[in-house]
Length: 324
Image (cartoon, rainbow, N blue to C red; front, side):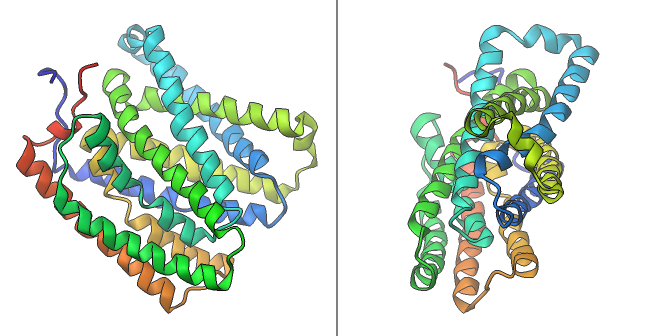
């Protein structure tokens, strides 16, 4: 263990506030995607529109950071830049693409609940690959949350089974890849800071997403879009990407990957409310039971995880970077 590694505090109100705000804004993403899909837009086009809006913002912020802080430029060695680009592609392109694909088959509220399981994978990856100790007390809360998902999955399977398994697996893949991103991003942020890492990672992912759509649909495809589609792309880029990514990464830099992952309970609640109100999605007794189980499991998971952090190691040591 590197003794000079920064230690993230367990109790940091500002860090938790930033992470919660990011989770709430991220929860609007599925709503805008479903609204856009109703107009027949492709997954590749919608993801590229999101990135077209976000890319100039991140490039501008990155140039501003580099101009104001000379020490940041010295930190940008080729290995650091390439690693940040790769992690950005994993978290902001690959994970997002799987999530966008999954929303072709799932309701916005069920998608958010499936994606909400990524804290469990953050824990598992921490144990398997990053030297964290396993806290077995968190297993029962995990099972409670997955029981909730099974309730809603069963209802959907009975009512509208077409594409359900495909969509669930795609979004679950998104959750798994995003959990891995959380750990890798933490390491990069300790090297170059949350702001600069976010700019590099998101800009790289944006270029990849835009290039994908240009290859699939061609440059002329943008000229055929309705104004409503551009509006949804703008909302996805600003409200569903730029603001929450900086808020969540800033929170992660203060409280660590595992604590950040445990603050997202507000996301599914906001998504459910908006999905029922705006999209007219059903919310039955099965949805209520399933959602209650998922959120209860998350709360219990958070408590058990914090207790384990306090018992196993000094505060924040679980989130310290491990030597290569």
